[in-house]
Length: 157
Image (cartoon, rainbow, N blue to C red):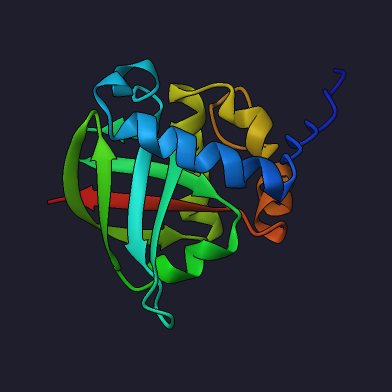
């Protein structure tokens, strides 16, 4: 049997791109035009743990009822540890919730499998393939964890 090589993780654009794109996407997500992008993007709002600064970030999500799954490897994830309160603009409506950072191998395997099944293009972004049983390959999962990837589960109120 020939095994496919691990996927190359998606290369993030330079930070300058996000400085322009994030405010534009946030504006759209808060506007009546949100339907153009709100099936896969939401606007996450939270407060920095130490700075007290407010943050607003557009981010891809997968929804299952009142639970949202988001993936990131960005530094801001530290602000969401410990069940941080967050707000999201989802489908043009503001909702409140609690964030839980999932970074253990078992929890990430379950969450990533769910995200990739719902949004197959996410496999390339995070660089994780699913095996024939629908579980992430252990090497891919460990590589993603080593690169700082986590899944954030938001339980909506």
